[in-house]
Length: 111
Image 1 (cartoon, helix red, strand yellow):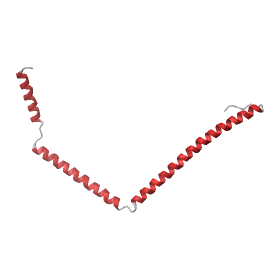
Image 2 (spheres, one colour):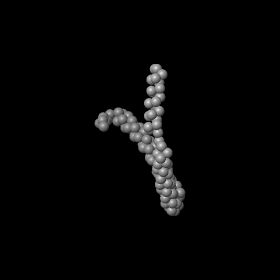
Image 3 (cartoon, one colour):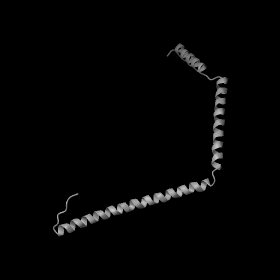
Image 4 (cartoon, helix red, strand yellow):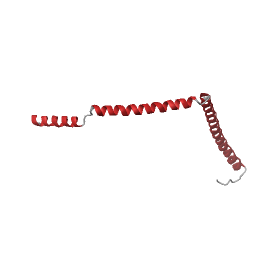
């Protein structure tokens, strides 16, 4: 690349930067937009906090919900274990029935 080409590239790059550079007015506009959004968000958060604080015994109610979920989960786990145990018990009974049927010469129908 020649020196003239390098100067042309630099000039084009600078022109592009200058053409797309934000002005003080652009920055001020963005600052105002951000401030408006932040203030709106802050007021909504404050409103939510105020509404939540109006709910009596909220923490106790949430703890009660967690306890109900824990109890339900424990029951589900217990039921799953019982089902597995019953499945194994049925398999053993099936084996015993087949053994007894064979000993007494009874033909069982396949299911």
